[in-house]
Length: 383
Ligand SMILES: Nc1ncnc2c1ncn2[C@@H]1O[C@H](COP(=O)(O)OP(=O)(O)OP(=O)(O)O)[C@@H](O)[C@H]1O
Ligand SMILES: [Mg+2]
Image (tube, rainbow, N blue to C red; front, side, top):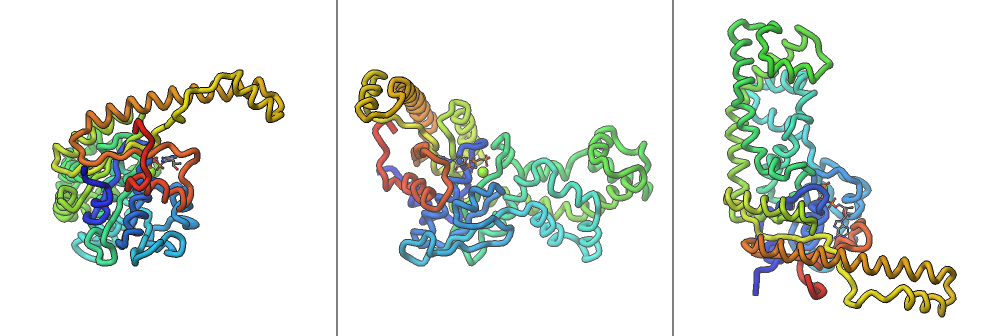
């Protein structure tokens, strides 16, 4: 018997769904969280996606940055599991890091009040990815939860996410920042001509500041931040190492689109090269055809005519065409699923989730996805 997704749900401390944009990471993360909670675990589903649809599908009015427990009456079947949802607060997580590593209360307040910090802390490239990792690291040992399921942000390149801790370390050590600080520390003040070209470009992008005011703000900010770098760097390294443990499972999600499958392969390879555990491959939104040949337009038209449906001839022609198109798409998906299974045979668990007729918008639909993930509903032949 190949290993099942259910043993990940019962044994892991952290599950991270990864994959390229729009393939169903958030949906699969929520369905895994629901299934684990139903099996009796205390689960936190941490999402980055502010899309209201996840809140709705979990039975919430909206997602908050604070933990919100989902009413067990809405989802629990048996057992004592709990299901909690939380949306990542990028800025708040950054503030918490500053608070933790600032040398003094004054330094902390200076940084948190600094206009540059306020402008950039939520929007720097890579910050949401890093903060998601940071939050995960902070929550994984939280005694209120047995399992944290992390949904990753909609990055254009899925690797951005895994490389975020390393990028954070690199950014802190970047020559531009070092040169800037050295210039400031030599003179105790800054003039525009000391600012490197690269830095000037970054600064001009921020737009809302001018001349001396801006330079003072940024110099203060970088200077204070430098005091934090040691702590940050050490923390980023711990965050990265935390992803390698045997209690962390990565679930790679892909659609049967050839580009998405290609990216999933690249992703699995990256995880494995970095000793991160790619434990499951979810092939999501796979289109399936009825196991019957498409009826001809004439046959359908005569059936519709018998049922006295107006416009039977046109309807018959369009139904027949839609049926043939569905079969074509389903064959294409079947081909991609087979390729994905072959190319990612090193991933121990493969699951196919069909494309449902409608988006997954409530707990019942999430439950159907969960059943597919657990294999409690058998997939039709060909999947
Ligand atoms: N198996 C499925 N059948 C039908 N609809 C699905 C299925 N899986 C996901 N969806 C729908 O597809 C849309 C995208 O899914 P989701 O938000 O989970 O993707 P994502 O990978 O998190 O996207 P992003 O990269 O933007 O964060 C949603 O509307 C969701 O309800
Ligand atoms: Mg998402």
